[in-house]
Length: 409
Image (cartoon, rainbow, N blue to C red; front, side, top):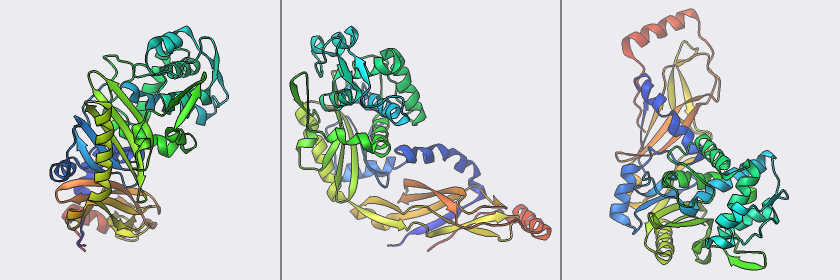
């Protein structure tokens, strides 16, 4: 494989600043700047879906495998419960509640989300006490609206206050396109999400709350002597599914966020705008099976491997090697592995003294003309401040030649 490589320094000062937000979003979920054209090319050549909106990501590398209008704002329906559970898990992890904490079923929770409502419910009895652990199972396995409201009222005092917590957490996590009005996802004109945010949220829940995530794969739950199976149809298909949830509204159609593990990789998909629950399950299965066959993993750099160099101003050395802290790899369509290229972009020149391990810029990986991945790069060693003569020479060099460097290998 030939990988062309370039380093850009001072000429990209403004670009590096602009990329800081996408870098942060990689930690949580997806860099939105990734792969819009590449994924569009992939879908045109290799796959199409009946879903009106779609997004698929390979979790470990963050590679976007398929995208179709993922920024369109839609009604989340029951998929809003992913955000509800994130807030609950966050409260548990912070120690403000525990799985044994008991909450009382209010009349609002019972009428709006319980047996009288006619919607998804765990059939919690009016004025009974239910533990947080049981409510979590009711919400995740049975998509229980009453369970959501009971948790919301117990944690925040009211569902409205809990929705404020949902929105605050969403902003903290970088889910900036979405707005939540209630804990259940019941229709409200102000409640909207994007598939980009839902996939990022799904990735975050798996990574941040492994002690709770297993509930998404639980086959069934019985409450009030009523047995109900998990509403996620993917769990009963032979595709390696272990979560997450489904939703339906008349306006947005049938939607799903699904997660699978296959061949040592983890895949997340979000679909919306499908015509029936049968079509939802079929399309989700089809896109997962397509991804398993259509992509291969390419190792770009090993953890700690020197990626390139950044110019240094006023130091004992004129440059410092750059590295990534983890292995850098991505999934690419089998036909496109020879079109990879990479650029390191840094705010330069770096000014001495420099410590080893300082974040210095980003490695940007492209397939053809399309950006597919961004990863932070760090200084591999320290550089001390040089003497006055060296700093004077560097100052003159900066004025006369700049600090742009092009490398090939």
